[in-house]
Length: 247
Figure (tube, rainbow, N blue to C red):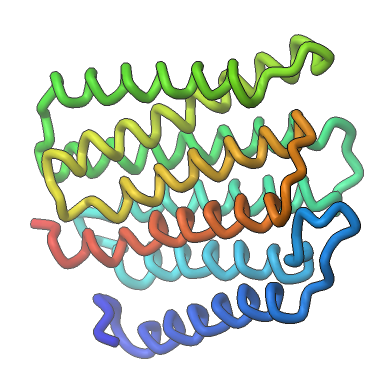
């Protein structure tokens, strides 16, 4: 595998990907089915996957993108991934805090903002200034976000804080997906980050419907997780793609 990063860090990336795949496969192959039948993967295998991606993002930033035209992009991706990992820790119940769902959205929303800032760096770097495409995609993203929130997320007994938080979080995710999509339309080489942002949106909508609406269909939690973690991986490894095409 030829990666745009100097030795020995290309080998470290490969090892980390093998570890990532090992935890993912092990969780499905040997994990016990939860009593509500919504997942086989436990936090014991989920959290290491997210941690590996955060480490990969750090390596791409410090040892591949540093002192290049995409350093700010790579740094924002790492900060977004680090905050996403922190939100996973919160939802896993490893920290003694009340209202884990709300804090997950606060921390995850901050991570989403860093991802949007990373996309802004790509827009500037590649001079992707088609405003009509951006506005159209953002409007579509907001409409879809509000529609999904109204149909699948909002709960009458959830209270104003939870419902407002889920709406804002959904709009942030929809904006990120729309922004990435607008950039990919103008430059197809950026399709991986658009796919990653889209998967991130879908995963969080599945998670919200499952968690807040108690929609507990078979392995829903695992489906949401694998959608989420592959979306995160695509975003993290967009740094490798951009390194090969950046001017």
